[in-house]
Length: 288
View 1: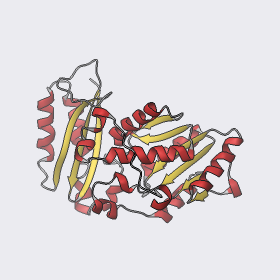
View 2 (view 1 turned 180 degrees about the vertical axis):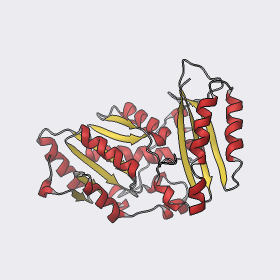
View 3 (view 1 turned 60 degrees about the vertical axis):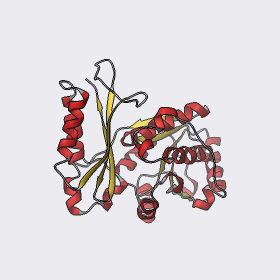
View 4 (view 1 turned 90 degrees about the horizontal axis):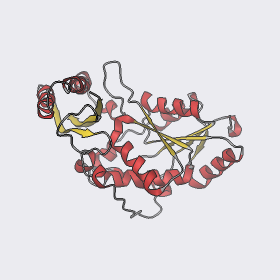
C-alpha cells in the first residue's frame, strides 16, 4: 500500500492532490476513486471498501458541488459533518481524501454545457433543470485531477450513473465506471445523506417507498404499466406526509418511458418523493 507518512493524506488543493496521485502512479499502483458530497453513510463506505478491494491506491473527494443544486435552500441545509467523515475514511484506510473549497474548484465560473439527450430530460433532469450538467462539470473536473483507473458510483442514483457513463463515453475518458448496488437500512430505506434530516415520525414511514417499489416489481409480471403505476400512487397516497414528485417506469438502457412490459427488455422503476421537506429518491429493477 502506498501511503505518505503512513496515514491518510488530506488535501485541499488541486496541485497537492495531483502530486500525490502522480507519486502513487509512478510506483505502478492501480487507482480507484469515490467522489462524494460528504455526510458519509454505510453506502458510501461500501463504495470505499469495494474500491480498496480492487485497487492499490484509493482516493475519495468530499465536495458539496453548488452548481448541481437547483434549490439554494437545499444547498444551504446539506449536511457537512467533515470531521466525522474524515474519521470514517481513516478507519477504512482510504489513502487520500480531497476536500477542496468552491474557490479551488471554480476559480472562475465554468460555462461548459453538455448534451445528454433524453437521459437528462426525464425524471431528475425534468424536475431539476441543469442538475446533471452541474454533475457532469464537477465529475469531469475531478476525473482530470485524480485520473483514476476506476471510479465507483451507487445505483441508487441510477440516472446519475447513466449520465456519468455517457460523459465518459462522450469524452473518451480512460476510466472504468463501476456501478455498485444500493445499500439499505434493515427496514429497506435506501441509505442517503438526506435521511438524517427526517424527523422521527418521517423516518418511521420512509420505508413505505421501497415496500411499494418491491410490490411494483412483483406486480409487473401480471399487470400492465398503468395498473402498476396506479398501485404505487395508491400506496403512497395513504400517507399525507408524502408527495410524489415523479414515478416512472423506464427502459434500463436509455431511460425512455416503458409503455408495455416485455420479458426481453429490462426496465427500472424510479421515484422521487418529498417526505415532509426532505426529497428522497429510490428505484428497483424490473426483470420479468
